[in-house]
Amino acid sequence: MASDRDELHAWVDGRLEGERLRRFERRLEADAALRAEAHAWRRHDEALRELGRTMLDDAILPRLLEAASGSAAPGSPAPDGAAGERGAARSADPAAYGAARPVAAAAHGARAWRTGGAQLWLAAAALAALSWSLGWVSHVRFAPPVQRVAAAPPAFVRDALAAHVVYAPEVRHPVEVAAAQHEHLVQWLSKRLGAPLTVPSLEAAGWSLVGGRLLPGTEGARAQFMYQDAGGARLTLYVADAGPTAADTAFRFDREGGLSAFYWVDGRFGYALSAQTDRATLLALAEEVYRQLARTP
Amino acid sequence: MIAPATVSSTVHGVSPAHEALIALIPRLRRYARFLCADAAAADDLVQDTLERACARLAQWRAGSDLRAWLFTIMHNLFVSDGRRPRHRFEQAAEGDVEAGADPTSGWEAALDLANALRALPEAQRQVLLLVAFEDLSYEQVATVVGVPVGTVMSRLSRARAGLHALLEPAAGHAPRSGPRLRVLK
Image (spheres, rainbow over the protein chains, first blue to last red):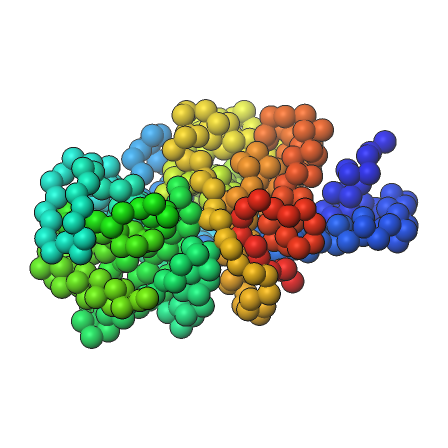
């Protein structure tokens, strides 16, 4: 005999039938508190299922298709973020095993990966190495907004570079929230972080905002804003909650494998500006970003 | 560009079982994204899962649920191999938002929901997602996660109560922390 709790879950999940369902619905009618709880849970469940449906509509990495086809060498390296070309296989219907179209697209993607992937893989490997090596590469400091020297970059910088490597090459889903809605994103993030956040405009410098995404972090939410220039190059501004006790730091610069990054902590937030560009170009952008953010009360 | 002949020969080389694996990639990836710390780690986990599944395809009994079998492999890989510290989701941000802000925006609700999910303890999140995303039976979830059904049910209870508290704090037990969010329609 199932317990009341189990019956409640089974009802939320639509797994009660016949007499069991009728019996439980009579219980719901008689018990307002139980009814409220059951309906709230079912609401959340429907939202979850909706979220789940939207997540299925995603491009598949060619290396995953290779792995599923049994053609990948086990333990082969994982070239994250370097998948320039992707098979857009979709599977909205779980019952449609082996439907012809997804497989054809899948095979196409896997093939494209094999033929054009070596260079991308090398780039990805170099950048991944960069994200772990920041602890001991040298730093160049200049024009410090506030004097303070730290030995190693804060953890958010490594995360920022990793996030740049992962999302900058994205073709279909570079951002979660498009630029048209960025006001909402900024509002929402500011509320989450408990401090006002602004997104600088870099239009004058030739970089337009693509949008932003929210990322999990060790100490609260982080945001990544993505910009793109006329040539399709990507620039990301990573914003992390540095915590209430964080002290301001100078601008720092790092460069390796073609990826440059300036980072600093100012007030409540840590920032990292990353792009595959030269130091002088990025410096001008970082100063512009800093200038605009400093206007924020 | 790739010649059509190349593509079709690749397709013909894939057995029905491998086609079934390919069709399940989006589902494996979806679950992995809530299991792992970031998308890259999730894709690594999916890749390892698929490779192990291919290597052990002979062990899968045709006719049994391939999906449950795959999720079990993924779960075991996630738990073993020292993945946990690196791949585990961190707690989501603590929010201080009054409920009722901007009721209409769909993506806000979705982000809030995703954040609330990430704020749940790992074991609870796993059970809830296997039920809500995958619609696995409670018994299948128990097999995948490797605990008795009773434990699945109690984790499911705590997950749903926790999600409720995070999404609708006014409705019941006041949460200590976590985003206070709007009711999702």
